[in-house]
Image (cartoon, rainbow, N blue to C red; front, side, top):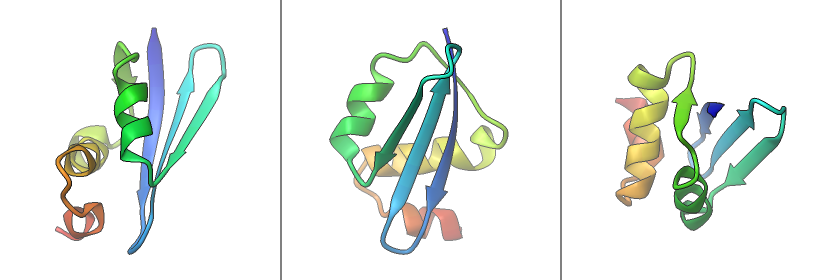
Length: 73
């Protein structure tokens, strides 16, 4: 039901890491299609700094905006 996540952004790379209630870990590296597909199956995302950072990074990736530029703002 709940999926915990964190985003990491570097100048030429980004990484999304998700862990579900069963402890299953999913890592997505620089793959917008995989990110979009994975998110379509998630009901609730939980994160530490998601409102201030992670959600904005995911939105940037899905909108074809450079996530590094977003992270620097």
